[in-house]
Image 1 (cartoon, rainbow, N blue to C red):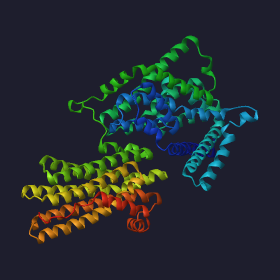
Image 2 (image 1 turned 90 degrees about the horizontal axis):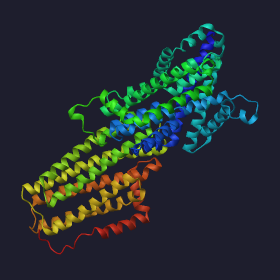
Image 3 (image 1 turned 90 degrees about the vertical axis):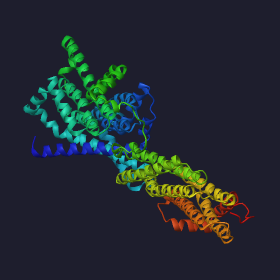
Length: 594
């Protein structure tokens, strides 16, 4: 094997790994994160967990990626450790699909139709179709499908390059001698484990082994222990991802390791014990790509069938390894910032969904803060006032943490839908944070009224109730529109905001008339002015949120131009505004008494 053959081998390996990565990314985009979201709604049924784990891994082409996601889910509290065990087992089965795809390259027949199933036949066609989709298709989904086709073609080209480069090694005694040593189960297991730990993909390491099979020098006696080691080596990715995670997340990674170690030990003990008695004839035969796929699948199905009934034992074993302290024994649910796990950033669709959950939770806390602070104007309560302050502090934390997470996420390769969702969140979380600030301002005005024993007249309170009801409704509409991404709900915000502006002016005019007649004090007027100013600003921020939801589809965020155009040219807007004016009409000003 000369220098140029080594270059070809390395180039083929690079293309193979790159093609696998590109194909996996394309499959992930086409699935739109749906597979990952299914895992979150997982029931405690072990069979369903195994099936879903296998399905997700078959789609994203990586058991390591699935296991890392599971570690993230457990770390954030979305998934319990007991649920994770079945998914991890299923992931090991799902990862075998890659070896079956690669085994198609070994098809040998002169039949035209059978030849069509060979990857070397159809992968060039897929490459042409993929390039056409990428260059000419306008649909993002077609572009993603094109990426999958090109990734597969590159993967198969890399596989063929590797196979071609190593084929001459069949005549090199030193190479044959090295592989013969791997017939020793311990050495073979270590070799497979180290190779997979380095490249962090059992699918890729199995593919490399399948490529080596073309030399005819890889017998089943060497291939079987190498495959066993590959299944253990793939655990390194989950173990690394669990560093710094919570204890249950570390336990999920340990479950993955124990599953593969126990499965490997039992399989090898049984296999070699039976082989010592019956002497399997295929052990001395040269392995082929299809045979490697059979062994890979057989082991993972065997390990799952063996250990699934003992999933609780695996869970307890992981708990014994990663022990609890007394204060850590209470398991917490997924809330707030815990959902923003850095492990999800490698799966952008999932990360966007998790970010949306946090943003919606943030928006609902803002709504609660506003409603609570408005209630304090008439009935002040110190405990509720503290609640408003606590919610505002939480919202501040949400804005900081979520904003940082979204900036990191924006650097990932997102599809159009996820990119729009991310843009909406980036634009809106600042407005929600400002609304919570105004909730605190309203609370402090209510506190001032209480401490100074100031009271508004019945007429002033009745007028204030009208504008506060309008603000509660506009906040409700903005939050609901944000949560559901419903443009029709978002469009109902601006007419109410317009009416709130008018109400603020009218409330000020009525207060001035009462002041001139000596029926109101300046001090009361200052407090009233502070409250109405805060209410108007809350409505302004709700308007910003609503405009963002409506404009994001056009990739434009010129709020002023959008509102000006809508107010001038929209018959619908004028009609809704008239209805809002009637709904939030102030009581007749029949008295000027305060």
